[in-house]
Image (cartoon, rainbow, N blue to C red; front, top):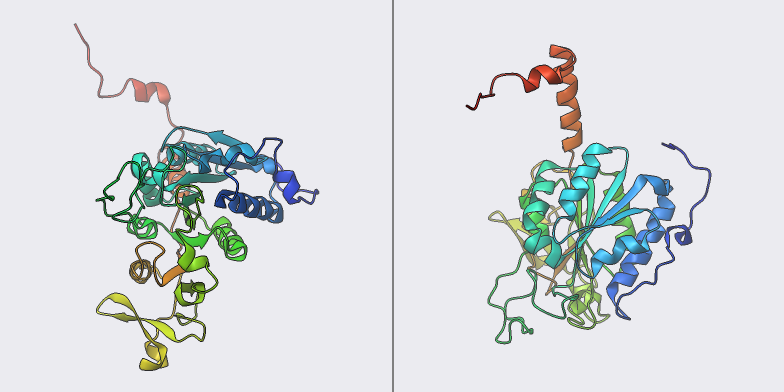
Length: 339
């Protein structure tokens, strides 16, 4: 394994010879460019990076990254990536998935990867629709969403991916937007430095089947009123003149006029808080990109990773009992004679 490199990477070094096949105008292009540029700045040898995906538009990602990659099966990317991370803790393992892939058939794999705190970086592209299969409603589509599979409107209550991740004990949770390159790059940097599972929800526009789903956060006339930019150690205010503030009241986060409360009543964001309650409260300010919505890093807490714990178990066992005897283990109690 090479610990250092002498070559200065550029974005082009992480591009492949494969034709990028997404619909013209898809938000995936912007995310791909940001990730390729970030990887070049990271300076890590390409041989130490793995991208694992499931099924869906977003899951074409490994074809377009000049690193190791696996285009796996529907919903199982976190499970496959977990095996890689445990077997090769020296690698930087990234999962690329979508709201349908990760939160429907793959929901169980996702929450257990988060719970175990595997050393994975999970990028969940959320366009609130099934794009690859041509426009059915997904687990994050708003209630009442009219699609080919819900002509009378979806009756389902959607997932809030950030709330779900925090509830599953994820140690790093963030949200960004495909159009905001700077925020995406900042979040990717913090995620790469985190030891354990980093979960990043990326609002991604599907201009064919769900166009302008995030217009309240990206439109010039609405974004300042609706984007709550989370900054560690800073009071949470937003609006063109900072006229809105977030406070905690009765265990819930609420939005109030800034001039209606004392400065010390305004919530100060702490990404490193051991207890995720405040981060969870922030995630409940919005249920989807409608009205004031927090973006940025919700949580960046220190917790031992699954790989660290397994390695320590092996060290402790060897110090206590010495080298193991596989033959003795196979022939130990728990065997039966069948006649």
